[in-house]
Image: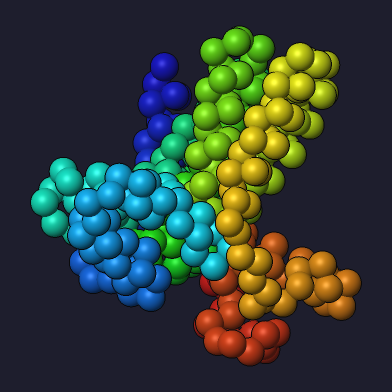
Length: 271
């Protein structure tokens, strides 16, 4: 028991330091996409008396995404607090990190592994250098962190064969899809889990739900090609896979638009 308490205290250290960082650097101001996704959305939502228009605003396309979750959180936060608080939105977005840590803990318990294995996960998740956008940008925080949480939550529900868990997985997969564009891929991962479990009836239901969700997602959809083709980049610049892995893992050595760059003595601590 004492060892478990010690492990929890050790795991709490990166979480506490991350919270201090978040409280110190976060600001109650909009930036970038916040103006369109939060402020302009709320303006149009409350200035419309048509329920159909209000509903469509929640699912309105933004670039290649349908950011329903971001808009829903902003709306509920405004209704609850009576004003737009970007502090509150940042906190809600970063709470997804705690949810992700909890999901990993559940899987560790299912495998009967020691709690100490949760420490490297906490160190990986609760470090601010991997993404400024994902920590201190309100709209991005709700999308980036939450889509990972909902994806893992979906797989978590599918990891057992209870009927209720299956329908909860469909719900979380749907929410994942309408949190960020790449959330669509959770349906592929979920189908793979069901096939490996040889659960053929749930697989058929899952596939049917996939087509329904895709039909809704791409209804009246405008395809936009404003970014580089990821497959083309993978073929032409395969080294980026390795470099981006290092960046994601905490080796945030590139703070400029130039990459790769020569390392300096000040970068040694990051390594």
